[in-house]
Amino acid sequence: MAQLVRDEGNEKQADVRVSNIQAAKGIFDLIRTSLGPRGLDKMVTTPKGDVLITNDGATIMKQLEARHPAARMLIELSQSQDIEAGDGTTTVVVLAGRLLANCLDLFKLGIHPTAISEAYQVACDEAVKVVMSIARPVDLKNREELINICKTTLSSKIISHHSDHLAPLILDSVLRVSDSDNVDLSRVHVIKRLGGTVDESRLTTGLAFARRPTEGPGFCEKVKIGIARFCLSPPKTDMEANLIVHDSDAIDRLLEQERKLTAKMCKKIASSGCNVLLLQKSIMREAVSDMALHFLKKLKITVIDDIEREEIDFIATTTGATPVATIDEFTSDKLGSMGELTVVDGVTYISRNQDEEKSVKTCTIIVRGANKLILDEAVRSVHDGLCAIRCLIKKGFIIPGGAAVETEIARCLYERSHSQTGVGQYCMRAFADAFEIIPLTLAENAGLSPITTLTELRRVHKKGGTTYGLDINRGGEISEMFALNVIQPALVTISAITLATETTRMLLKIDDIVLGR
Image 1: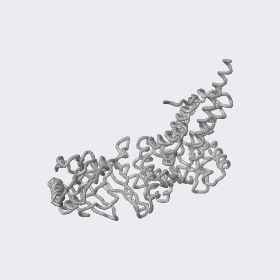
Image 2: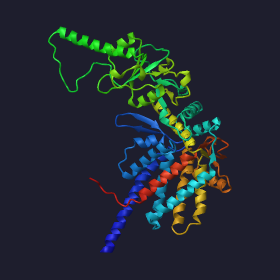
Image 3: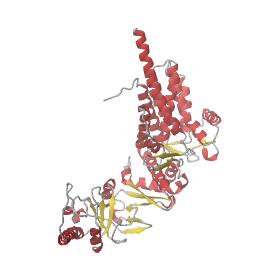
Image 4: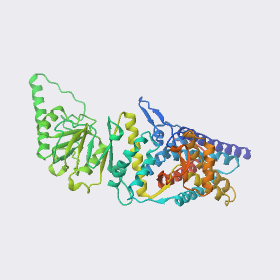
């Protein structure tokens, strides 16, 4: 009887593990076709009817509605890679899915999941060593090389043919806000402006708003900016209330009182010396009334309303202004000084003073696009490019692209598996085999023969061509990637290997799924 119970318990644990792996394979099969410069796009529809077209792994995974816990773990894995490196979000999911799929063959050999988990960690450490043996240090002063790295990141995007224009903008913005060993990307503000082409995108060291001012002059010199977090509109009661008026005189008195209150607030703003007023978006009532706009126009104060809460900190850092919560606190010492306010092609620009041009490390990228889908994809691509340059500043090493590193990792781990004893040999081979899915998928998505391409790559790497990879743009030739400037940050691949291994090990150690209260 005890033997029967034990067998049933082992069978249940095996079923749970297989269920987790099958769920992960479902995500793997979905995302795999989006890998590489010739990866296919996905059209995502939301319950609200919105349509999204992208091949960015993190964006696709974020929109997925997965119910299985293991599938949700892969979605979180993609998001973790996006936070850590900003690129490689599709690669990390494909790699994790293949590592888990290879575990099924190891289970058939009778290898315990704990032994597989420990062997995978050893193989992961070896893979990272292989990456660093291929990596080369990057010179952050070599502008051309940094632009080529950014172009490689953009090559798999829908807007890849605009990379010659976007890559220099991305590089200049990151170098402007970077410190010695890190980059705070919150200091790079990206705004979207519908209309025009992606090639009309531009970078400014000051502020930019994707619309004209709500009211007031469209040109202003010696700008004094005030940031208001209060509403310039008649106050409302804290609770629902009805005001009953019996005659027209009472209505006139109410309107007069409202006019006096609004005029007093506007005069208070003008007395501080403010000539450009930024109003935070309000959800309870309108941020600024028509009457307030009328008074502010007479006082020659330019108004830009509906500023998002997330933008306030960036604007305050850029301008030196202090956000004000009440009208009584709106004084001259809370204002920020800037250069000129101009309106060009429907975009409002506020430039910096010459003496503050280098002291304040912030900038704004204005991305333009012919329609909303292209515009959204361009913004996502700019984000990936920013993260790629940030990776180089955090860890200043570059590696060849075109699956050269993955092929070399597979070759080295196959060779080192011969020195392993026991089940570790089988596990390291399974780990090495998982990396060959990257060149196979790149070739398959490009319409090439996967087996022929992988066989040729193996042959070249066995002869010592560690930096040779797949050149998709030349019909799948096996070429030296550094010579073609197909390069990427080492941190992207190292992060993908580490995170994929951690997720795989975590799923392997799950032997049951319990419903909580």
